[in-house]
Length: 312
Length: 284
Image (cartoon, rainbow over all chains, first blue to last red; front, side, top):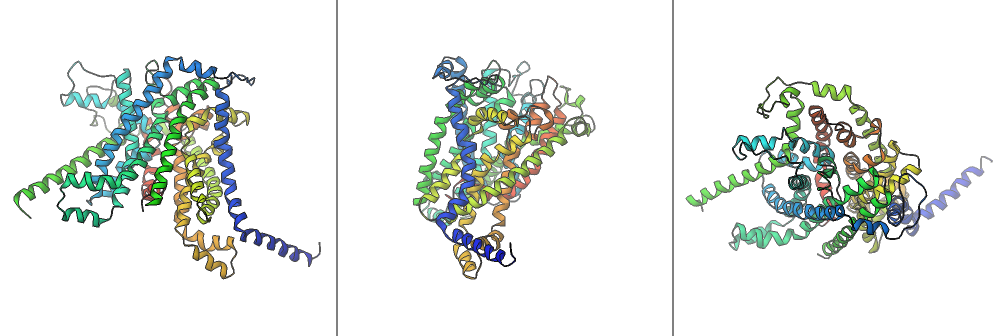
């Protein structure tokens, strides 16, 4: 290659590059493509594979997979543990998100005021959301300990629990469920609070002033002015809460491992114990697919919420 | 307006406000306070049910932290987490910055829809995908390897950060790039010399979130990794330190605290941007 040809070649290449870059119809898809390909390969493909497994005889042990139709699903819905898990998942999600909603409203209303040390309060309130959930749950494991539970000690010290009352939080099915619900509220509440808080601070001050001038009292102001205005954003907070609680297995995994006797199993944790620890990939995949309808419902609600926020 | 009842009401209001804050701060922060106390108590003190657990009956001790750092693989887990976090952050930026920029600059109504579509994939939970992934990872020969996590974690960091960065790039006026291009810069030149410097805060936010999402992840970690040398912090502490009937409460609480608080502080600085991303710009 001669010395003169090289700059000419480079110039030509630059020209092609320049035309490509200036052609926005090509440029934007080219910039988007890598991310989309990655997502399709690492979310779309495994998802399809999950459906395939659920209709097959896949196990960890063998690579010989054949199609079995809906056999896995019939096996699952005839299992008591399935109904128990489904019920637990729904109860857990509904109760915890109800409390999250109420608490987040109260806490955000308290945080919208200015007061000294607000940044510290906010940091402390955010801790459960920010810390890895598996580690936060370990903290609760210690708090709910059968012998050294600080809750029991405190309740007895102040006279709430009598001499012969010492609940084993994680050892009795109903108490264990209650404990899991408490930890879910604990972990989602910070996120819901900051979202509702963002909604509250976006309400223009004139609206509050106008309500004041019109003589609305505190409660009327809250329920007739503020609440309708933060409703859409609160819906977003609730949708996130539902997804994160409904599909979570970490809290159950750390606190009870689904026990005692599978009574606190949720869909996600049962899928793990069946598919990964039990090696029954097909069964595990079929179980975890029961999470999907809720996911679709929430995604649709999201799109509606997004469209509405675009209109206003 | 300063009648006696008005003053009394104001005092009651203030007391109520304080009571609400005290209640919630106690509920939300207590487990971390409890970790702190437990970390520095002697095992003997922890296990004496006659002792008031709120007080130190023996002098505070550093034994649990010593055990944590010298007798467990805690340091190894920290370095694993950092390594995976760094690799995932790089992959995330490489994929999400161009995608976010394209979504922000594309014309037409479907750019927004595509953006939301990408964001929604962030909501597909690990608990739906971990079973097929366990097989894929095995077929790729990546079991027990940190590379399995490096490969899979961008599946949730990329959607989230693309969405976040799209918001940032949209806030930068198009005119700035157009002016730079009129001045003779190419589009890439305009991007690197004009857009990048202004959106450094946005990139930093994306880096922080990609990193915290990696630290918080548990499901894939516990599925792909089986030997303690390859654990990340979030998986190592609850699985390895809990094995068997003996719980090393002091060391465990120390580990939780050390792994939680630094991220909490960094995250706290960026939380408003995070909320803006989560609420899809519904709040301005």
